[in-house]
Amino acid sequence: MFRLYLEDREELPDDQFAIEQQAVQPLQQIFVVSERRVCRALGQPRSSQRYTPQISEAEERLTEGIVSLAMEYGRYGHRRITTLLQWEGWRVNHKWVECI
Image (cartoon, rainbow, N blue to C red):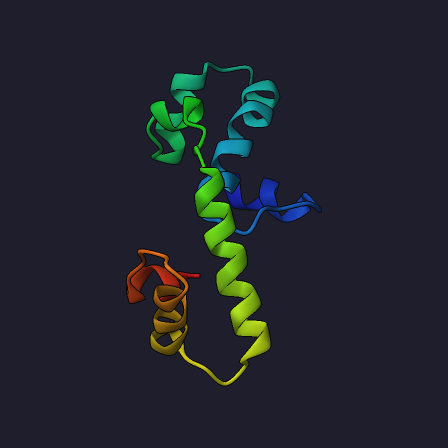
């Protein structure tokens, strides 16, 4: 039932967490049940409904730097981009760059 509801929606976020977080309230209204029951049916912790990720300004600048380097040097891999960022003074490891 949860998947059928989501397939009808047009604007779906990319990550699974955001999809599940946005699905609880409409399902609550459709089935007229509590948040606790909807979360239990979805197998999702209720605490995730109140969670809002905090992205720092430095993290956003780092992400922009990674993307700009990747666009400028298209054939460079995550290890080379990590090295370029470290030369610029960023304290970052290759796992973070690979994730982005």
